[in-house]
Image (cartoon, rainbow, N blue to C red; front, side, top):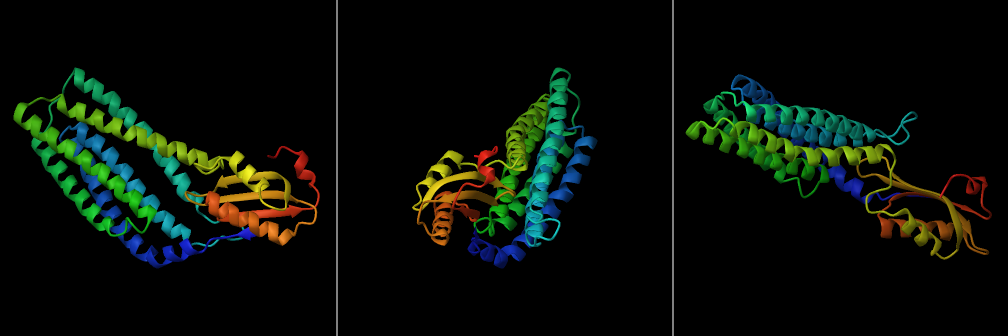
Length: 303
């Protein structure tokens, strides 16, 4: 028996078009300014601008991944991809995380060098670029704000842009300080601060994507609790071959072989187990196989 929850999917379909438009506009703004910020960082010799550009790259990647999730999520499974194409989102996020580790490492290395030997910085140009970045972030936040309460994808992208707005504000303050005081070491200090701000979020992203690629259980779901709950279901004598995993960012699945107690009705037990898994563990895609006697899998390496 397979249980599906279609209510969330239907709600998503009604708002997917609007969310995709919001994300596309925000991605265009962020992606364009990302290029401007990289050029500005090189021209004005500002490591803080380059570090903020790395942070803005995380925003662009988050927006692209969120947009990808909507587009690919609308594609049905086929004969070759029986689970659909949701894992492209995870692969893109993992690549993004690895690339960000490399960029953050470079920023930290270069920042330490510049603290020891400060280089001249075009603070006025740095100030103009940072101010423009702040405006772009505020516009993107305004565009995404209307959809953040209806879509987790849009909410995640909104929070990414919000975090980058703080980075742009930090660069803006650094540019003002350098202009007034000529303290060149402020530029690498801000760059390092932004790099350290990005690293924990990058690690969480890499950890979560690796967990999904290894088909780990959903966060907050203990397999032992699932096992105990199934065994407590009336009509269940024992179970084996229990698997709970995540195939996409929010697509959790569960399969289990259940041995029926004497006299138990197979259909009733399957329905009861499926309903319980949905209500208690938020597992909406479940497959429950009932057996009168344990099958050959029961003696293998299964839980």
